[in-house]
Image (tube, rainbow, N blue to C red; front, side):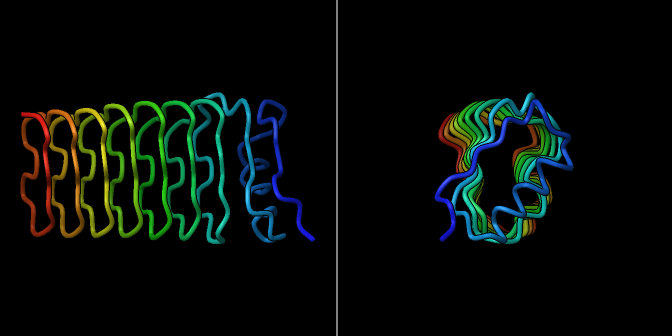
Length: 173
């Protein structure tokens, strides 16, 4: 029987070792892996193709959860550029702020950022849902092809510029 939760202290491992441990835990049927001290490392939990709940206790860097299909990622902290870039299915929750291009080229699934995101969030979305609890930067939703973007705060200039299809809701101005 698989262990219910696995835990890794990222401070003792390289990015490659961390990603290999996530994929190994998923392949072994571990339903949840908790990663402490991620120290804003880039490219964590990329291309996770097996359902698993990945929890980061601390900030992550660029491209967290990118190109993943079916997992659930929780970041208890902020993240850098392109969280959830090209996410196919599953979900990513960021309990902090997000950098620019959050949910870029999102294909399916859900990306939720509790705080504010930077410029070009939701750029070139092809499906899925991006929810931002705060405001988004300029050119967010640029060239959106499908999907839904929900901005609870304000949107900077160029929101939805050059959209083909899709839906953008803005709660503020």
